[in-house]
Length: 333
Image (cartoon, rainbow, N blue to C red):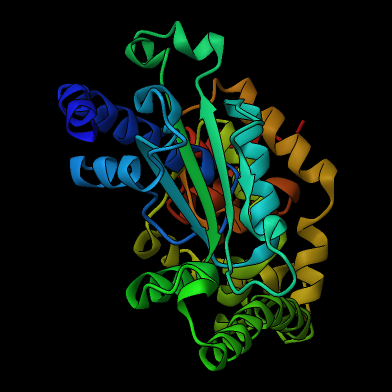
């Protein structure tokens, strides 16, 4: 029986491969725009023929039409560094796709207290009606796919569990079960500790004086910088590679000195005033959303330049700024 279904799936698999690849590109772009801290790349795959057959054989009583009932023929996986990024990924998925609530699973929420497992979130989705009408997505209009969200710790645990193949307590002696449960608790604790360490590290950084090391670190870890990048990427700015972005570091230090920032907290406070970002976006819009690249360091510098009149057009020009960015930075109305 399963062999017959495999023969039906085989000619369809290339279409699921295209679906997985196309959705990988879309999710990568969305994660970048939202400045979500994840481990690249977004993983994607179409279920292999062997895996398809194994799933039918393992759950033969469950499936009457596997091609319709198996929801992960195309699957994607997003691995985030921190657990508090998971809700942000969920929001992206719910805002972008049509969610199949019946088949969407929060694995951790389903576990009994005495079960050993450590799972993330698996969304089953399909394209929205609007997306399904776009030429690049039209062939996928009737197909569902799965998006799995894991933290880095959850991903590590899932890979270890897969290697040792202990997926059910029925196969594990009580002594090993207790040891696995302790390990799960450690992985779970690690997820919380990484968030705590990150937050305390950012707080300590705020008290540091202005230096090349502290400012560079601030630009890469501050939630405010991520907000700035998220905003300008939605305005059409492109991502700047790290080498080019680092070239703005000395210029940013000079700007901080001119502004008399005495520590990282004063820099962050200045950049956190929403009217500064709002006026910058208005200037960008007035000049037609030109194609400009920005990175964490460069966007901090751009906002300082745009927000203070002492950085005149001639001052910026002397430092190599050219149109269209020169005009935007000088537009402070």
